Length: 232
Image (tube, rainbow, N blue to C red; front, side):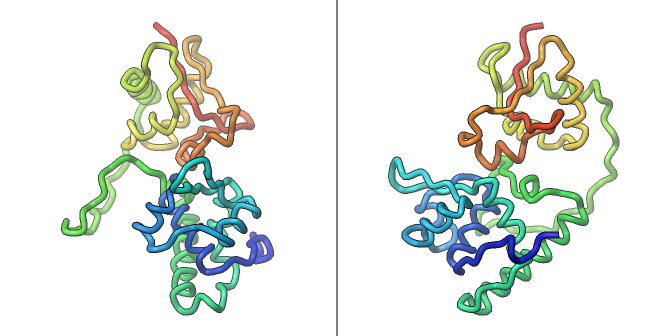
């Protein structure tokens, strides 16, 4: 179990930045942070998060853009295990209550934070649109492996610029959002044995987004992020 010592001492604003970057699961500019949460990540707060290896900040152009690193994801997932900073007041304490209950629920459902928060490309509801309670999930009928492989191949054809071109697994998963994750992972692992299929990790891990990492499939002892299917 993670101990509070595994979570560095952070200011309320640094905590807010980690949480927003986690729940958005993507790179955010300071403009987007301001629009979404009412603050930007600059100055000492940004410097500390970068120095701790929790946030990767792109300063090559303005506005600066920020994204959680792997360590940032770990700390964000475990924030609830530490004591909230006193200067944060009731707002920060309430946030920690939400994070604690979220962690417990995802653990019970055996769903990772990355999977839960990953971007699917679905349009967000406008503020004026009514929000309804989600219906109870229907019973899941197992899909034959051959059918899942066919779905993967169809999604690849839609996404690839040419046979054999590399396609990110994040895009494949988005295309097959209604397909059970375990069934899709099983199909991808089985497809590695096909002569026309290659599934590989991305060598430059710094280029990976949180979305890419969440979509990876574990094969052997490493995460794989890209798929290529040659001509039949």
